[in-house]
Length: 293
Image 1 (cartoon, rainbow, N blue to C red):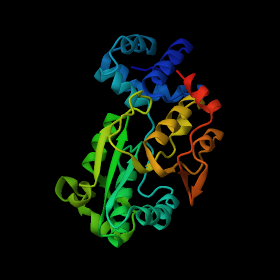
Image 2 (image 1 turned 90 degrees about the vertical axis):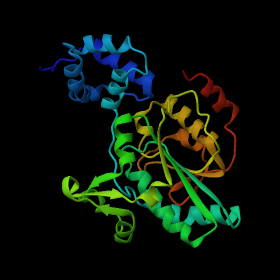
Image 3 (image 1 turned 45 degrees about the vertical axis):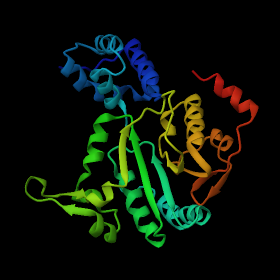
Image 4 (image 1 turned 90 degrees about the horizontal axis):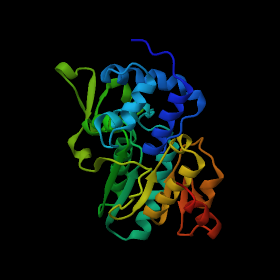
């Protein structure tokens, strides 16, 4: 089948549904992306057009497999090992020594990778932190890696990648943390089991009202994600991140992400990571947050 026409009504209805289900906002320029990514879903469900497909998915429970499949299809999952590596350098050279220096001779370094996609960012964090904590034998690390897309989470947890994907990984880390594939997995590598003990993958929707995390995190990576949210959703996410950070705590955003809202929650920096020191948002900011849907 060919689905070239996406009416205004269907586009705006699908856009609003995605916004409600995920917090992701699609600008008008994303219309070709919606056509491209939902064609397969129309074929799978046997629907004859985008409006027909919308009427089908909107009638389903948010946890229905097809509604989840729609969200999976419309989320962007660009990632790479040690992407924007300045964050990793600053984490190792500046942030981790600060956390350990104020935490005593032993402890647990807790990190949240909040949009882990296919896992490269989470595994990069695990490799770097494993290396950094060799200087502090009383310390260990726990990394929670989450994503809204259930398809990419399966790939992340499997930890299997083509050889070319690890070209940006330092040679020492490649030798220590990857196993070479053979047979049907020739041309691929797999994350070694020792590293897997450090990372826990799970499904999480940042637009959820339930941010009831168990414990707090020293560091949160939320990189290149705010750009997909409108200002109201950006506020909700930053307020949520602030609430799950330790005091002090650090946040890594994408290097090109810039919005005045960030400074309402994070008012200092350590290298490329933003610092939260426990300052509460002003009354004006809090009143704005309460108006967010």
